[in-house]
Image (tube, rainbow, N blue to C red):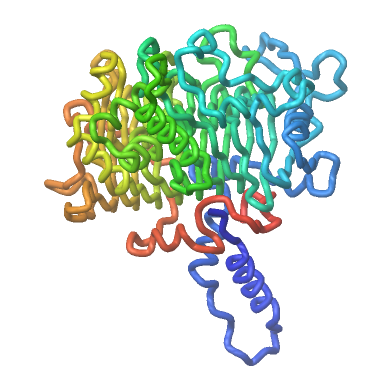
Length: 561
């Protein structure tokens, strides 16, 4: 899963050395232009998309006290505490704005840490943390909100042993959290609030999911809405960049972004990131979203195998008092659904992707949402790529391959899986959704140079606000689409007559509704794109491909190359 930057590093060194060896008196031919791979690498290691020229250069903190190397979860949490800014807001009657001044007892508002290097894999599970970490003020137990329901909900041994944490990065500016070796962070997610210029690079996130099941007392099993576990929840922030990371399956969503404007609600101006001007954007680049794994040594397979073993013991048991905690699973198995079909059709796929815009947000502020996805792989994602409520999302050079899920979804639908679980309890779910771009509430999504496979409804609008607000717009430019394995591959753009992109709600989601929510109404940046026929190989490149890598270049501290 973790690949190497070494190839690209060698290319760059070779190019640099070659270009530097010629003098004015050399009679040799001038050097050729750098290989396209090197040019593209330099372009895409830089902060791009909506955060182009908005992210600072963290190399200025190298070899200073502001650079912190951490080797334990407790050290990571302490470094985040030390990175926090401490200030008070002072109202300026002349300008009608707040300014920030150091809080009482602090000589400066600025945090003392600006770079956190994670040197090895970390378990962030709440039950594994020290008492000091739990009382630090930046960690929440991510599994306590529904404690009253715990007797009725299945809890895997893995979750019961480790717990789940939400680590809060609040009122913080100018912070890079990264790894040189693609460190893996498990059993925890991050909540970013009132931050600016925050970067995560070359990290892997995993083990934030468990099978949803219970006895017949529990409600809404299969909807995966009890816990809000996501790897990132971002609100009231300035510029955020997530780059060269790998994401495993999560219980709720992968990354949620909401409340782009810190003055969206009365009385929250104090939450503004230090020095922020209200501008905001999130850029996600060169990431692999892999959903779950079928590795027999991985946590998902072990979890599901344990449930299957319990099912087999239950079937063999003559104990009349035996009470299974897996009524959902048992019903499917009793009705002829196989372990393999449950594993690949329900346990491995990622149910929800990216929610951009909370439904409770004021509509006008939602229009300021800006999120871009560049050079990313998405595998077995059922829904929300992204789900956008207002604002703009821009995807380019991305590959969405849901083929495996689509095939098992077809089998589960043929076996009436949804009706089977609803027969146990009417509000139990087995939705088996297959949607891609979901857009409404005045939002607009542009996808350029992207490949989509295994998506039944590539375009969807499911918002229900008033008519003017519910509309969504989209543009597809030079995109490839193949619904099922037996369907033809279509390559084209949404402006093409009789294009083959499936739109499930054409009355509410239209190309003519597309607009750029910018001051001049124009596209804010022009991306560098890769030919479709070489895109997958390019993203899989050993030296510069998507995902976390086990040997990173030291200049990951930079944001512009």
